[in-house]
Image (cartoon, rainbow over all chains, first blue to last red; front, side):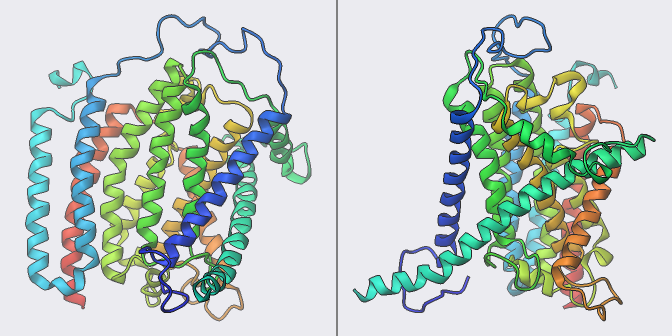
Length: 136
Length: 334
């Protein structure tokens, strides 16, 4: 991301990010326009049957806000842990050349601890799905 | 006044570049989706000993254009009891990051909208938005199947995100940069796939899972969940989900090409051919997409616990160990 003009301080952001933001805004405008035209010019025939949630022709019963199984929450929490650590490893990998063998040893230790954590989760049964898996 | 002049000077060439890039990307996204839908149907048909679309145009190639026109002209249905704001937000939130990701993809040596020094990170950052959009869309739909599909999609995507991030790091260490052009330049002698085959394999598996394609297509399992998170979407909104899905396929294949298959560089030994870089790039990308389709129509769908266990118990440990080993190997080579 080389600055196009030297000495231009538009914002603390680099010009590359600034143009990215403009690009993003243009895309946003375009997509909103598409959706607007589709809803404005498109068909509008309302019908109570049409507005019912589609559950393969069966009339829906009860609330659709299901309480989903606990393992999904567990996966989300494990993801948070591992993703933060992946972000940490990312920052290590970028300065990989200047860190030398000491850096390699340190990250190896870090990853080893991470693997131990994974093993702990595994042994504790955090990765089990469904009630039958305990008997296996 | 001078500052204002500077601003205009700065915006002039830059803005032109962005606008031209955006138009190009939009054209690419549309044509790519039309082509891929046709290709997918043809590949599926031939694998199952059928013929596939053949009525509209030569080899049925105009079929998807006709389908597209029909799709766009359909009514936008907003069912009862949906969370209206989120319901309308989701198609935008799924499509926007896809278009932004195209900014840093190097189609050839000069054909790139912006060669940022955070290129690779930017693609991963924006592709993660997909998860959010899917969850928002599925939850807002007020449909049990949509919610189940969304929850499954999120669990699967976040789980496979980790090995994806970790495996890409060995390429980053080798090229010593996140900039896409640097990554391609680092493969001028030998493609990364030849000496990092494990990383390439992990990347391709995770990319298949990230794009929710079979054998990892549980979020959209049509035999159990109607259509997954986009069951309630119709017309243009559904079209945006659809476009995003096929563009995502293009992006993951393009990133795989850049990271492991030498980007816009020619095949080894074919450098004497007068073929421009972007043709090599698209050839490699579409070969990878073809392989993904081949896999889809060859393997059955995995069960959800198998899918998650495969990620947590095999992919993540392998990716972590691979990272340590290759960090050491690259240090020795350097």
